[in-house]
Picture 1: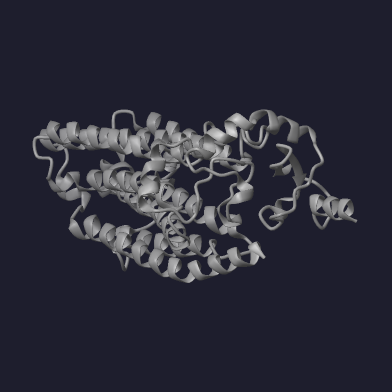
Picture 2: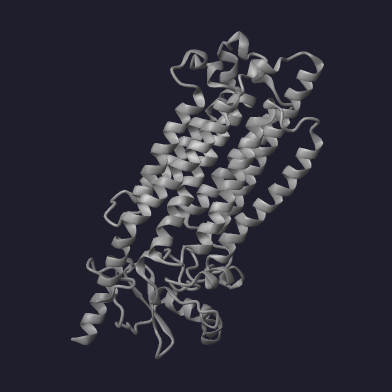
Length: 410
């Protein structure tokens, strides 16, 4: 009877195994159970070995496991189910943890450490680069530079939020939900900053689709409304009963990026030769010496980043071997940072070209229509909206997470 119950627990309700493992601490083995049974079968220790179980036993020998535990890190079967990432079996930090432990864990071999540094280091590098750019401008606070600084703020904002979210999400259930809702919101803050930069420097929707000069609201406010709705939808995916959580979590970000960068695709594609530019936009839609190169490289970087996450490569093929270094989310961070760097180069190139044309008298700064209301104000509003949405969602989600953790322990 015990063997039968163990086998049933191993296979799950549908009787099939899918490669998820539970450790037998007595015999130092790993056995296969269904994904849905992870952490809901505490106390049950299946003993059957499998091929992948043997591979993981080799990867997580007793010495390696002891070394990770010396930092307070735990395997997936000892942490709450809601913090588990599929195919990532070890290196989890305790939840809840103190703020001091969260800070120290940035230097521990946890499965979040490189997620922190792969966005914190790009943030520091970008700040260093911005200092050099600032000192190279004759008038770095001129109105024409506002979209560039707005975009730079969006890049630093998402880098810093992402690093902090991965660093402090183990502090408590409330902190976990607040951090990740804030992380989703940071994506849309960056999206708005990118849209503003592209609109004023690269190519405006007024060039080929919309009469932006006679819209009821300035174009940045249209995008502002879109990204606020997208932030709310993405945060809704955190609820335990959400059926389409991955669709709700990622599609708003993908759609907002497509909408914000679509003018670039039009300008740098064959469509550009089949549209009639508005007379007032003809010059401003031709800025940059060679921005197409950076645009397509940034799109390529984003596609590679999405591919890593979508296919869970490489941890899906070698579960347990890339828990600490080399898993898909770390590669996602690296390639998104590269994509943002390329877009930043494109923005700088277009700004410097615009400044050269203005200095030569070939372009008037008033043609751009740049002011505080179309740059700074929308960014302040989106940051406030993201903070409010994240706080409200965290307050609603934390009790649900606590309740689910209590139920899984019984």
